[in-house]
Length: 220
Length: 333
Image 1: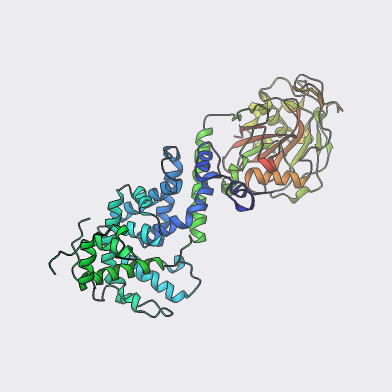
Image 2: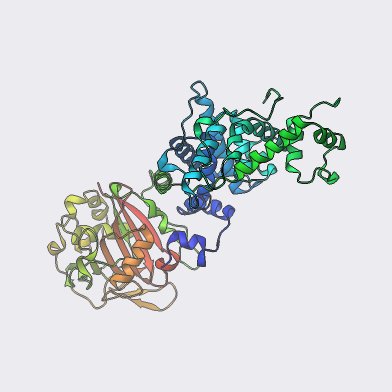
């Protein structure tokens, strides 16, 4: 007997229903459909939330809140974008809301060890790389951070990210450019580290002289 | 150098362009020329490239299992809440009929239901694990037992071959009476069934004296004997034989039969319906709307004080397709 989830995925794991069809089934009362959508996209949603919020607990809360909201308001999905884009947009907004709420207390919580990225190659180096990058990302304005995470880390096309963030593509490019400029000095030490060794000392983040000797004031 | 430094956006575009002399990239020659001659801007472009490379080199992350479980649980609870809200104030939920008289029920909707909420009863038209022995009881009903017996979680289930020909307008009353008459301690456990069962004037066997509809009865053994029949009751029809809406007469099963006759099949169906093994309260191999059917009553794991009733025609396949011919809820308290 195939499980319900297996049935939704189809034989041999092939997608029997695309995301839009699953969302329709959810609206029609299929109790498994939305969970299947979640399973398909959970890792990407998690990565975006974790790297935007730089806090595993908050990322879990944000993803959960976002998905509950999406589930409740599934009938608001207009179908003019991919379901995955729609979900990312809701998750990103949930993250940005959380960042704005804690803006008055800008402490940076690094990811818990328990929720550190799964690594398969050089565990120490990759963890330190992730830690340094997250620390650097946490210094960015939240809109720049979201753009960097989505475009540079997660690899989504600029136009898709523009849809997720509900801004023009040019704005995404601008935020990425300014974000990269700010990250450059913070991550410079990583480029000088031996490739097969630890990525660097988190304590040196921000202490390396910036190659950007004439950074413009960020206006966004 | 007299030209102004390009904006970061422009330098970023340049950084994204492998070949800065590629005019198709849209980089103005003046910008390229400036960067080529400006050590500062060259360093910025190189730094941006390193940043992108560093960001792209991050290992992928997977949602931790505990977070996945937590969110799936939250989504399941949300589904439960929505279901309860939909059912609030609705005593019976009858699924929309399909042209072929088989209603597809997404029974797997219960897969996420938390076990902690298991108070209600589910009456399902397909059951099958852990039953006692076949015992002739009142009303011509037979209490059957399967060979799997107490294997199901929670104990034994009562299995009947009542001979009833249920119809969708009275099945709730009939099932309420069956539970009260045959399930031990049901009068105390499911007090809410008494009005439902007692409100029916005639039994499925056509006799108002039939114990199913003179509930409550403390247990199956308390049921008054009635004429055992080879032809059992149908609503207003001779026991055991029902005029099928499809023409030919249908004889009520006298023993567990059909695709859910075995414990294994019944258990597979229950798992398909509710996502886990649940001991049914009662199973009846009978007739529903003129067709042989299995009726299953289960404790609903999510809705307290509610009896849920599922009916599965022999032609349906809950295991493979999740088909359920009828579904209703009954108040238990």
